[in-house]
Structure formats: structure tokens, C-alpha cells
Amino acid sequence: MLILEDLCCSPEKIIILRDVQEILLTRTLGESGKLQKICDILTQELSFDLVWTGLLETNQQLHIKSATGMGGEKIKGLELDEKTIADCDALTECIGNITSIFLSNGFGNLALHAFNDLPAGIQSLPALLYPLAVNNRCFGVMAVADSLPQQPCTHTLLQLIAQNTGFALGLARSFVTHNPPQHDLRLAAAVFDFALEGIFITDTEGSILAANASASRITGYRNDELLGHNPRILKSDFHDQDFYQSLWQMVKNDNRWEGEIWNKRKNGNIYPQWLSISPIKNEQSEVQNYIGIFIDISKQKEAEKRLIHQAYHDKLTNLPNRDLFLDRLNMAILQAKRNLSEVAVLFIDLDHFKYINDTYGHAQGDQLLQHVALRLKACLRENDTLARMGGDEFTVILQDFDNRHDVELTATRIINTLDQPILFNQQEVYISSSIGISFFPDDGHCAEVLMKHADTAMYGAKENGRKQLHFFHAEMASHSGQRLEMERLLRRALEQNEFKLHYQP
Image 1 (tube, rainbow, N blue to C red):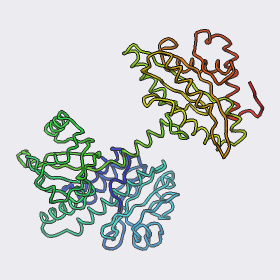
Image 2 (spheres, helix red, strand yellow; image 1 turned 60 degrees about the horizontal axis):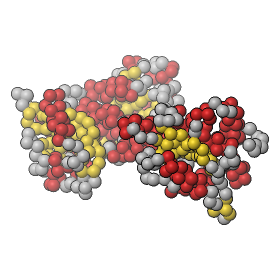
Image 3 (cartoon, rainbow, N blue to C red; image 1 turned 180 degrees about the vertical axis):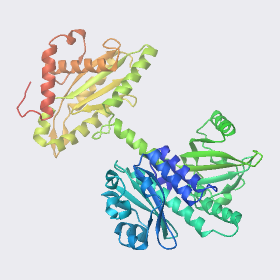
Image 4 (spheres, helix red, strand yellow; image 1 turned 90 degrees about the vertical axis):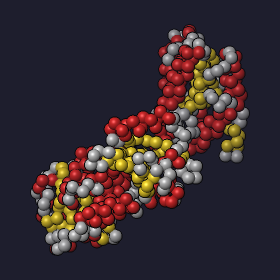
């Protein structure tokens, strides 16, 4: 059984699932109406090419109740008899084994005459069949065709929608009685108890009158520990009073508030929720109760955090990459402008690192770069920024220094540290580094210029024998500019193995 925490995707997809559940709870819609609205939502919000649903009737016919998308009008209302279904392996497996089925060649795989009227392009699109079932009994199928590859979280969303649809419609069929009010009460109670989201129902004073099993699972409180208490017991102190005042003002004005909120579990763990709060009104439009529906989006947040980290950090050393470095340098420049202070940029390049790769191989060279990254971090303060630009190039941002001599001491410390041998593959490996330094505001007023000038100064250090530091000065911008640029391009091409020749500047 999937739970909602498996849906590590955008809040928009979570909203789609919530909207589907609201449709399933709408009293004024019959089975066909609910299924048609679900098809409409999936095609509109997720841009599927074709969505259809079919329900098994008592005579074991599969009646296609709803369809939306290209060719949907051609199959809506069709009935597939028991023999037709039995002759179709995909439908038989989906219904008989209550399992999702992937159709690589689309609905053409079904080999059903009923689908021959679909446009040729739709027939061959990759498609998925999802069973609609409750209590291990399948009573229908939801089918989706899409020209774009399915993302894992979209597949999870569709599974959840099929589960919820099967659950709600299956219960509705089971609870049909000659007493419609009793039927509605039993169905509502069942959906409340088994909903995947946490649900609170409170009185107008905020005391919890009812809480479902998912509310207990998410918050960690037993049902009896929640009843009679205000949801404030979940308050994390992450939000200020203005946040809650704005929340309730929106509930009052718009009859709904929905958004992200940080709450606290019974064990003290603070976690993010996606919460919606709505008033329940009587026929006189007077508020009688409030209903809160919430889900735990911790896994979604963790997934987002991992993706952001991967986007802005070097995979090999886990240091900030070029994009994050430039972002931090721009921030440092803004702070320096406000404080009338300086910023130093250090451009560090390892000397003759190509020969390390040639001698030991790139895999061993990568390990050596990891050792270098650790040594560089040990030379810097916690608030300094160290980044890897790529290859054997590293950069540093220094702020809050008293004078330029402090910057020179830091650069000298780096050179001396990297000059010490590294025990590598049971032998000592010697490397050295050349460092170029530029300063804001004297050497440039933007990140790109400061980086360029620090790079130029670094090549000046290499020209003068390597294993030393150079400060940028204005003459460097024009002196031997073309020769330095040619050397830079050639050297980097060699390091990337773009040319097969020996090079010793």
C-alpha cells in the first residue's frame, strides 16, 4: 500500500490528489460523473494525451464510463464483453492480479477492435493501466496514454489516484442501501477513517472533535491524546503570530487557507506539512466546524534539498561549484559595498597536475584532488568560501580581514600546506600550487572581473616559476595578454586530453 509520503514531488501534484478526493466525496455526482471529472483533471493538469476509465458491470462487461483527450469521444460508452476481456492478456492481468500494466506500444497492444477508431498516433503512444479495486476485488480500470516519459512521482500519483478512486467507489457500491442518508454517513465515515491525509475536525473554538488514523500516524499522538485539544499542541514556534493571524483572516475571507506550515510531532521532531483549512457552514452560512486536511512533506523537502545540493556542489569534492561560488561572491561584494570593506578572491591552480593523471590515472588523480580539498579547507576559516571550478582549479573568497597582509598569510599557508608530500598508494606524492589574488573594489566591481583578474594573476605566478602567489596589478591586463591567453587555452586543452602531445611550459 502506498502512503502519501511516497509522493516526493511538487505541491501541485499533491493538490491534484486532494482535488480528486474532493470529487470522490461529492454527493451530487454519480459514478460516471466522478470518473469523468477525474479524467478531465488528469488531462488538464498533467497534459496526458488520453485518459479513460472503465467499470466492470455485473455481467462482467467493462463499460468505458469516461474518456478525455484525443479520440476520447470515440471510445466513451463502449462496452467490452467478458470474452473480449479474456482474450486480452493485459486487461486480464490488470483486473485478475490487481496490478498496474505498462503498454510499451500503447492501446494497440490490447488488440481490441473497439480501439481501432482511435487516431493512429494515440494507439501507439506508451500507456499504463491501473486497477480500480477495494478489498482485493477489482471492479474497474483507469488508463493513461502519454507521449512524454513518465516521471516516478507521476506514476506514484496515478497509483494513489487509482487506489483512492477504487476505495471510494468500491465502498459506495458496498454501502448502497435503501436509506440514502445512512449510505452517505457510512461512506463518509469510511473515507474519513481510511483517508491517506491526516484530518482534524474542530468546533468553532478550535477543540478537536474528530481525528483520523492518518492524523495519529503523522503527528505521533494517539487519537485520545488529540480529542478535546486545540491543534496548537502541534505548534512548532517556527512561525510568528502574524503568520497565524494572516492564515485565519484568509479562512474568514476566502473560506480556505492552503499552504506549507511547520509543525511539531509528539516526539518533538519539527517537520513540514501541506495543510488546508476550511470552515464547515450550515444552511444559514454560519460556521459550525473547521476541517483541517494535512500531509507530511518531509520526504519531498529532503528530495528538493538533495537536488539543490547536487546542482550547486562539486560531485567529486562536495565543495561549492562555480555557480554557487559566483553567487556567494556577488553577495560578498554587496556586503562589502555596504560596509566599505574589501573582498579577496584567490585563484588556486595545482602545478603540473596533468602529469599526476598521466602517471597514476584519472581515478587516482580524482582521489588526490579530494585530499587537496581537505588540505585547503584546513587552511581556511569556517566563514571563508572554498570552491572547485573544475579540473585542478580551486577558488577562495576571503572577507573580514584586517589588511592585505592577512590575505597574503592565508595564501602562503595554502602554498606551504600543499607543498607537503601526500601519502598516496603507499608512496609520497609531491604537488605544488600557484595562486593569483584580486581585490574588490580595486581590481574589479563585479564577480566575473574579479575572477578573471585573479586567474590572470595566477598565470603570472606560473610564469615566475610556480609555487608562489601573485597579486593582480593593472599592467597584467595588457602585458603579454595574448601569450597568456594562448598558454591558458593550450594548457587546459592538454589537461582535458584534447591533444595528445607533451607540454612543458
